[in-house]
Image (tube, rainbow, N blue to C red; front, side, top):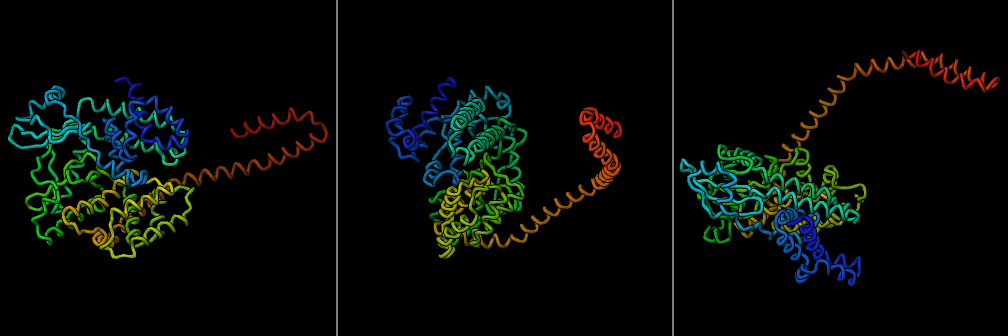
Length: 502
């Protein structure tokens, strides 16, 4: 497929996704005439706008499905109905024949006794097969598709060209679309390097030794590389409502609490979180442990950003708009154009809607989506990983309800945040103290040099006082008696000063 045809194909799909907006600019007649260029895709107009976007991305395939999945985390950019629709995007791509994969990775033939031809998961970037090593161990083998990198770079290049083409639209600048596309590119390229996923799996596995109810499959490093990843095969049951029908309510409630506590601890204590937690990536094992798989999307927050997210979350739980807005400011989400007093008032009105009811009656996921709709009205764009984290926290409630339908997150989250508050504050103070000590240490090390330099400057200035006094006097005399001599006098002063400086 030529690049030009692909560009026309992408523009055509996106044209009909935003048809109503374009018709508002060009008039319905103008939009209709322009649509004739992309007539093969006009059938998209038969879908409601949110569904239309999902269908368009599915048809474009490749990186656009991945971008749609990533957009489903950007509830600060899209209305809730679009986010909900994009969450339905499944990266279902016809699997590449096993023979073709093995022809690109011939070393796998030597390492494995058996590889199941039918994959247990197939996407645009990679596919996963059940396999057995020569020593008899049952494993999961994740393999990058040979042409995945080429297709991703082509699609991202097309998207960047489109963003550049429409850079004159105010919303493109206001919502920092070029930076968001660059962030998508970084995440997509990262998915092509399975050593990063393996390293995060090891990090979570070490953490699981401190968390008794979490299990993370081990990485088989000797049979892993940047293009394929071998891990333990997890034999458990994927989360579904049917799985828990026979469990007593007391056990269901306890399991839901355990799951939420695991997620909270990975976020606030490990500082790393699974960015794609959905029921398909969570297994319940026989010993009632939760096994997490597929660490292709993992969020890592800097300590400072994590502290601000903690304060933001605490501000929401405590109904404190000052804490919420201050946290948003410190992470750079609130621009100079935002009226802070108006924002605080809107936040307070929003929180009043929820907090005049018992914590047990608050729907955390709905609160999250409506909270981000306030951000959109004020053109607040949060860092991508922070939005993913906020959505992960909110989604823990909906996943916990699969286990126990009456579960609510706030009664669990609020006391947990208060319990870890001293540790979070102490950690933040320690980091700032270390930075302050380093800054003062650097200042003290430079102080002797700075003092010597200033003393020399003062001496030079003092020695030049008589010179400049005499120069001004001479200038005044020549100006009064013979102005023509100034043409010689001024250059002479300059030369004399240079020689004196040497």
